[in-house]
Image (cartoon, rainbow, N blue to C red; front, side, top):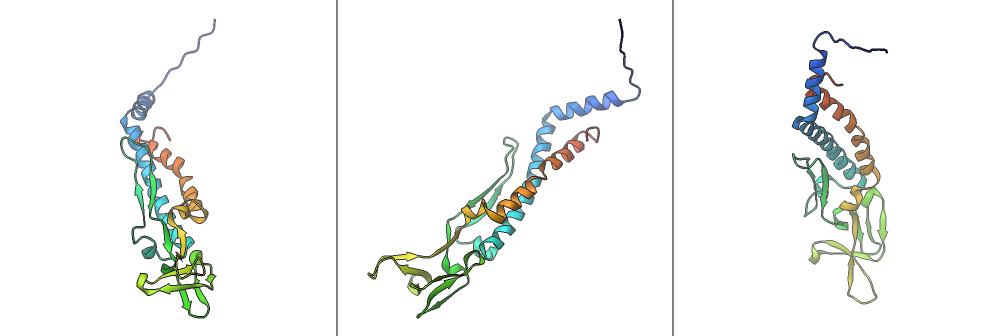
Amino acid sequence: MATISMHFDGDGVVRLMGATDALAGTRKHAALRRALNHTGRKCFTRVKRALVKQMGLSSQKIFTGGRSIVQRPASGAHLEFQIVTFGGAIRAKEFRHSVSRRNGVTFYPWGVRHHFGDAFRVPRFGGNLYRRTTKARFPLEALYGPNLSKELVKDASAAAFHQVAAELPRRIAHEITVITNGVVS
């Protein structure tokens, strides 16, 4: 019959037991929350910057008038970081535009030129841009650009999110190293 025996010298087992205790307690939850919030804040910043370029507006115009983008960080109860938008489509008047009596309206949502030959500005309605839907005087159709909620999940903003979110496993490993005092790395 063969016998295998192990002998440990030093404090390796004690340090390993302390590290496993740290990983099993509430400190593990706190470390995951810190890693998630750290990476989430970086995502939020990059997504906001990408949205500004993607939509073709300044951030001041995008995030005013009831439109906003907010972050909801992970808490002690929920390990979830959210980026939430409020508001709908942005009126055409907010974008760089030109109006002429003869040629209609040209405006630049997404940084791309859009021309409407039958459109016009109504100063009494706040300077918004409209076009007729029929040959009659009314009804009028307001012109809109991109919708903030739809733009959040596509193109450059989605790419920025996925690029930064890929750093989360490395950040979790860093937080685990911190709570185990370098025993687990």
